[in-house]
Amino acid sequence: MRSQVIERLTTVVIGAGHAGLAASHFLSDRSIDHVVLERGEVANSWRRERWDSLRLLTPNWLSRLPGLRYEGQDPDGYMTVGEVTELIERFAAASRAPVRSGTNVTSVRRTDDGYRVTTTGGEIRCRTVVIASGACNQPSVPQFAGGVPASVEQFTPFDYRDPAKLPDGGVLVVGASATGVQLAAEIKRSGRPVTLSVGEHVRLPRLYRARDVLWWMDASGVWDQRYDELDDLTRARRLPSPQLVGTPERSTLDLNALTALGVELVGRWAMVRDGRALFSGGLRNVFSLADLKMNRLLDSFDEWALTSGRDAEFDSPERFAPTLVPAAAPLQLDLGSGEIAAIVWATGFRPGYGWLDVPVLDAKGQLRHDGGVVDSPGLYALGLPVLRRRKSTFIYGIEDDAREVIDHLARYLAARG
Image 1 (tube, one colour):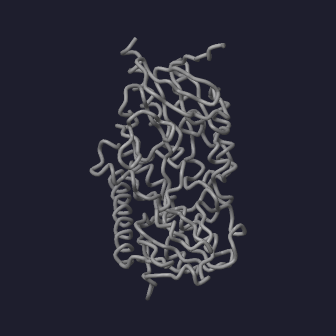
Image 2 (tube, one colour; image 1 turned 90 degrees about the vertical axis):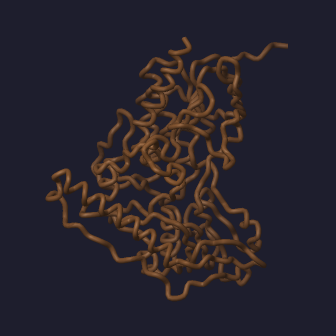
C-alpha cells in the first residue's frame, strides 16, 4: 500500500479573500514559500454569501489593497458585489498568489516543529499558519429562534437575496446595524410591511460637512487607532457596524430615514414565549446613547479640523435631528397571527473554527490573539475586528495589518533558524 505524500511548506494561509491574499502578498515580498488554501474560489464569500443589492460602505477611492488603488471614473461611488469580487480577483492575479481553490481545510494540529494541516487535497506540514478565513463565516442567530412558529419563514443574510424571494406579508428584521437597516429599507420599498427590532447601534451620517463620513474617520486618525491604545478593546471588537449604505445619492440611512419610509421600530427582541415575540422597552435610552456617541465623534472631527488648520476647507459644522422615538412601540408581536410572514436575522456574524484543533479559542469561540499573534507559537490571524486598528475589517484596513503580522511571522521564523 502506497503511503500518503506529505507536502512541506513554510507557511499555510487559510482563506483567499482580501485578508489571505494580503498575507500572501507580504509573504512573497519576503520570499517565504507558502500556499493559500480556499474552500471555494477567490473572494468566495463575496460570490456566494451576499445579497444582490449590497454595496461596500467605503467609497471607491478608499477601497484599496497592497499595490492596487482605485483608478476608475467614480471615486466617490461604492462598489457592488461584482465589483468587489473583480477587485479581489485582480489583486490575486497581480500578486501571483499561490491559491489552491476547492480545497477544504479539515484540521489544523500542532506538531513538534509547527503544524499539520489536513485538507481534502492531502496533508501539509508547515512551520506557520495564517488564519484568514474571515469573521463572518456563520450568521449569529439567537437560540430562541427555535421557538418561532413554523408558519413564519426565517432568513439570514446568507439566505436573503432580494425581496422577491420572501413570502408575501409582513417582515420582521432583527438588528439595526448596517445589514439590518439596509435590508429593512429595501424590503419596505418593495411594498411589504416591515418591523425593525432595534438594539445597540452606531448612528452615522453618510456625509458630514460635505465629505464622506469615512473620509473623516480616515483623515482625522480615528481609523488608525491601535488595538493596544483602546481603553476597552473587547467592547470595540464587538461594536456593530455603523448604520451606513453606499448609494449613488450618498444618502444617510439612519432610523429617522427608516421611520420616514414607514418602517415600524420596536425594541431589542428579548425572547419568544408561547409563539409571541417579546421586545425590550427603553428605546428612548437606546436612541439617546447612539445620538450622544455620534455627536461626540462629530465633535472630534471638528476639533481635528481646527487643530490641523484645515477648518476653512470644509462646510460649517452641523448637527442632526435626534432619533425620533415612536409614540407607542409594541412590546410584543403574535408570530402566529399571520401578520409576520418572514423574519430576517441581521443579528451579526461569527467566525467558524470547526477545523481548528489547537486550544486557542475563548469561551465565546473567538481566537485568543494579541494583534493577530495567536496564542500558539507560529499561528497568526488576519481580517478580524480591530485586529490591530479600528479599520481592520475594512478592505482598506488590511494592508497595514497584514504587513505587521507577516513581519512578526518572519521574525518568528528567523529566530528559529
